[in-house]
Length: 629
Ligand code: ADP
Ligand code: MG
Image 1: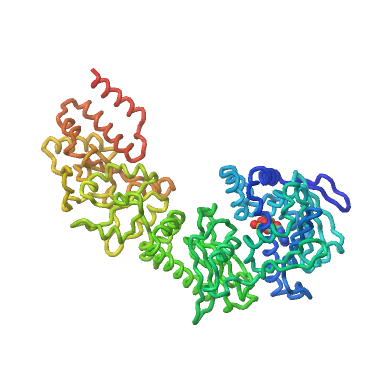
Image 2 (image 1 turned 45 degrees about the vertical axis):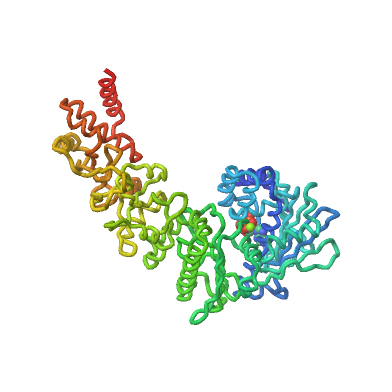
């Protein structure tokens, strides 16, 4: 909390909340390199304020009064190095001003600072808009910032001022110097930022960054000059697709997404028929920072007849929460309450229509421009895969979009269609292995027998993989099967030329060894058996035929959703020299030590620890001592 340092009848001085102070310091010192963004942030706040008023005025038209044309005016004074951004939007009351501009740390503040500290410089500036800290970017270019605001319908005006060094003050503003409605942010530019009071700089930045804000913007280039229009505030999405240039889409994307990158894909269409609406949606070119937030909300905006209504309507399923953009419809009444929207059948129709269109456009992109699609999949695949268990109806379609790293993929990604096209004779399942470390699962011993037969295996290392794969029984009639579960039954699939036969055939000695190990390891494994999935390694662990595979079991256990983990099955490679030698060992104590060591080795290969580190070390010590003599 902040505290009032001085209070007089008129002016109240306050100290910024500690995080805000740190943020301001950072704005000036770390995020410094791309200062142009401050203008876009202030314009975006002004536009938000206009859109809020447009919405509130539906229920209370008197708020607009005589002055119904919402607009933003940039007024420069190059001689005095001053710049003002004025809007006739909703405005702020005194309390709103104190809350919004400095007292209470906004939720994004700390997250933003962490990201900037990690990113440094230019990338930091790219992040500003996403974190709800845009206003403070004014201090990148200004030594003094003054905000005078009058809330629509109020007869009080307030002035907030600060030099961004730790304190701000709030005082009543004389009505004759306050706007009739809305907010004016006035910047006293720093010595090295005077160019931001010059016409050509302002024109350049507004055209490049804010040309498609849905509120008109004009520029007064010096005191007394006539306002000149910089942007007409026309809604880009209402224009025909063929008339919109790619850079206009990019510009619009940047203001709607609060990101500065290029959109990776743009979906723009008009639905006609029973429900009419226009959708303009973008797949971002980079990952938003909060992609995996617990409350993972979408950010599509809903407009009714070009009036912004809300960005909280769930216009898309959660697994498309990274999509940015808007839907504008004339089929809802303007005075629709935000609460009513969520239950309206129109919303359900929009959600379905826009989702279908985005997925089908992504499908086409995947066909025509596999590399561009691979980029999108790289960023958002782990999120889209949530749809595999959340959107049962579209599961087949989503599986069609999914791309995988596999044992056959080399550098590129493979689709399930690619996979099915490369099935081996007698292969009846789509094989996969899951784990949290892509490199380690690639080296899993359980894959050996599959490699020896050239059978492709999906390498699944995203956190969501265990969840969808255990609930996606098949794709085009082929079931998914974990290579770490059940018996591999690889016998019917021929070995590649030159591969050595692993084979489950065991000699009588090995069969006797297996029986002995079942007893020795009875408390730790459910079974011991000869394996046909190993060629080089001596042992591996697999899960029973039914129930979760080993990785999924670990996840369930970590989430406290599993009372008792099932015991794994230990598989031995009957052809492995070590197993042959062990079968010949008569000394029971030695055989017991080696059996436990092999079990721990299998655990380690699975990314686990030995069950009992001390016992492991003692056994290792005894066996080594014996070997070294
Ligand atoms: P964000 O825009 O993401 O909320 P900002 O730091 O840009 O974060 O702005 C903080 C808040 O200050 C806004 O949410 C809004 O409540 C208030 N604000 C800033 N500029 C204006 C303005 N021109 N008119 C009304 N409110 C404003
Ligand atoms: Mg903002």
